[in-house]
Length: 261
Image 1 (tube, rainbow, N blue to C red):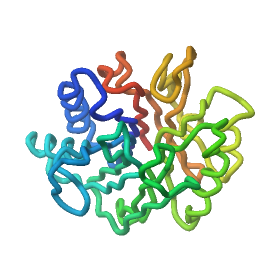
Image 2 (tube, helix red, strand yellow; image 1 turned 45 degrees about the horizontal axis):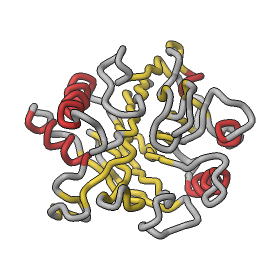
Image 3 (spheres, one colour; image 1 turned 30 degrees about the vertical axis):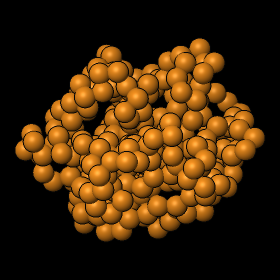
């Protein structure tokens, strides 16, 4: 089973269409089982296509691009958490080539006001893979030291929603550095959860952000913000950073993480 997570920084990138093509061709090459995407935006004034999804929804653009290459078996779950940059409905998505049994979407922030940029949702799906039901969630949480929307509260809200009767993956941008002790990552890992990076037999540095990006305007460090977590101690063949300029061209202000189970 192949998994990918990527904070897309959608519609904010230079050479955006070229970077979209890079993502599309990688999906065609790897044929990931499940893909978790964050910062998946669509213009507020874009044409409505179906079920709240508009014509320039970033995930829909990826799916349409895949169809042009003959890859027709992916479907998506998407919902938006807040208005971004005044003109976008910014949300999260899951793409999968397997049957979606149930869709999930819930707030993890105290705020439920979609006009407030710190409002956070998590989007998920129960997916049938080789006749086994598994839960997958695309997560984009807040910052450890945020006074308005503290990371601790969001983690508590998130884990109240997880069902431990099946394998569950939490994938995404957790906005807390996995290389730093005694802050958000350490608090996150106090729950009944495993980091596939450490379970992996083969892995690289795990670095997914270097230097200053949106939300980390003063950062000068290399950070591991993007994670694929699982609630069972499973066999993980490899964990590799992708779209980092070494393993495929850069497509976002975050690099992605690809894991093979």
